[in-house]
Length: 428
Image (cartoon, rainbow, N blue to C red; front, side, top):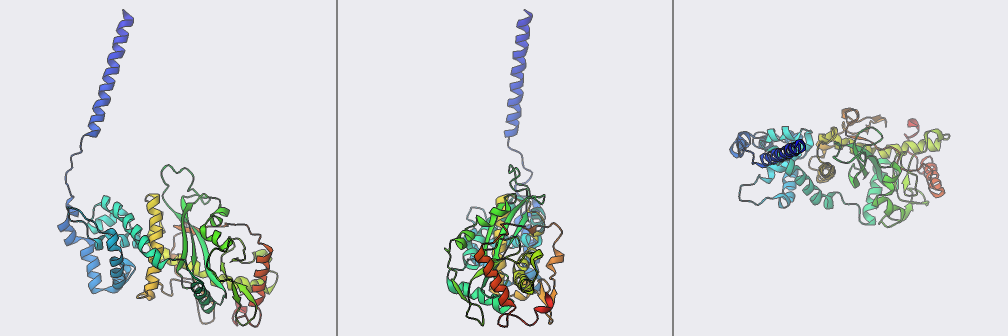
């Protein structure tokens, strides 16, 4: 009899437990009663009267173009042209009046340029925070889709590569160079359920940005999104560009003579000591292997030309301050933001209407009349352990015999009468 009572009590307890669970489940499913359909401070009439688009953007557009550039990082003409390009991609169609495309683009550019949080940007523009989270990746994706084929297209024929090589020779005194490559670890918020994939050896979460830059600080190729924890030696070797260069499946000219000589020499890209020495990739001599003047001159000349890649990243971080702190958004959104910013960087440089504002002399490394290097402001304005940090060694340091001979030939050329420059001796 006692056992029967115990069984009845347990059954009753089980039933009560199930009823409690069902009640909690139903309570969770009940529709939350909203105080407002649209919060008062983001209603359309308030936005049109007090939002940043009306009070700041339109005022600067009409009355102060210098401040407009600081606000959007581009001129009025560049913004209008960008808006015309993006509008077909981001135009919404619905029963309710959609948020104007101009406001969405202006808010996205402000978010990227000044590094504010999504919340503060939404308050500033009087836009719902959830709406901001939705349209920022949409606008950035549209920027990548529209601008990438026009302004960040890898050269498609030999003449385009030759123009880049001519610029490197004319501006930086480095012949047959078709680009400077650099790689950075880019800080991101730890992606959910990603384990240690994005946790790098520096102790933070990151994705990898690899880029090749031309002589005018423009990106001609980018690879974005590799794991920060990935073995450094495999990052460059597994890119499509590395494969194309290794297997001669890209439209780079075979070779041409070095200036003032009959010595035919291949075209190549240049990188720092972290990259492997290849016939198509020149790196400096190791610091413990500078016994003769030829190698010291070579390292100086290569370092001088390679500054374009360092300065391109410096300009990127200085102008688009969202990159100065870890991007606290989804991984896919962080990748899209980096893609969009590299395209915007090229777009603003190529359209040229305000180059003197976007690439000011004091921002980048430059030389005085005596050829002495003056460090750009970007080197001091970037926070320590900021968004972009050097990638580190990404390949073996032992070059093939042909690549070693090729580098030695170029080193001898730089100290010859045909290839030397008068002021190089005082800088080695």
